[in-house]
Amino acid sequence: MLKINEYAYNACERNGTLESYALFEKRICELKNYHLGKQNATYSWIYLGFEFCENMMRICDILQMEKKIETAVKRGYKVAFVFPPVYQKSIPMVKQWIERLKKLNLISEWVVNDFGMFALLAEAGITKNFVLGRLFEKAIRETRQNILEIPEVAKNFEILQPTESMKSICRILEEKYMICGAEVDTFPDGMLKLTDQHLEYRVHYPDIFLSYSPYCEYANVNHEEKGCFVLHQLCGAECCLYEQKISAPKRNEFYKTGNVMLGRQVKCPEECIEGCCRFVYSERIHLK
Image (cartoon, rainbow, N blue to C red; front, side, top):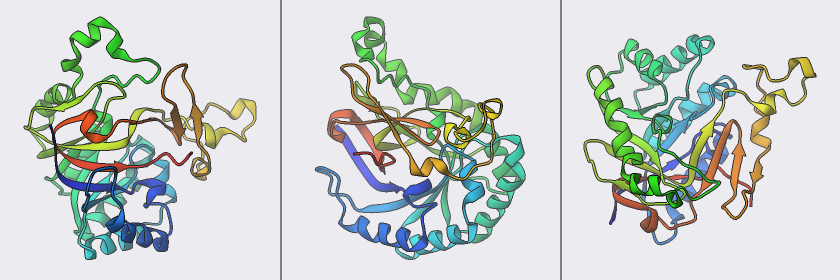
């Protein structure tokens, strides 16, 4: 049985973080009138930040970000700030972001997607309200076939649940950091079962995170052959203008948006989630 204790809207990247302040303000105003399926949602959380790509932090105006956070809090929302995986070259920039956000003192949760970010936040004196981001969840999310048709997988599907994969990570991290929750996705096939309430779970819906890459084909598209396929090219956020839709034979479509592969959950929440969670509306796909 599904029990939703609160609702959140994922406004990361172009869904709020990178867009103009005027569009962001309009977006959160419209949340009051938006209900998903049978869910009579009243949103109480806004996610801002950068889930999968550190380059987006370079092109984002931090003054605009601070203004958006202040506006969200004034409207009665709690703000969760999301950090992407970060490479060595970006650490000075990320430290500046952390200091500004800490000084603002309006962030209710810090969503982290790599181990090094915990150390950077702790170094800045932030010691609590950490959340494990979606990249920490390592369950198989195959979209090209129904993995439950494989007898061995169907028989042992319980060990693919996030409540299992998160246990070992929490044992490592909880010695030093106060972890209060974990971000997870639904499965393309099979039921997401949140049976272990040691952590509070935040379930993203309808988008399903499949994989991501540090290499960006959009940033490399205009380079000469010898300059292609190089990591960390200069970024102009070209990915915000394009998406790719990929069709697998006899299966649901999946999508490339930025450096991320996504699926889309076609079942209603009650048919794919079991247990208690925060429900995070995570609409990254714009193709129709």
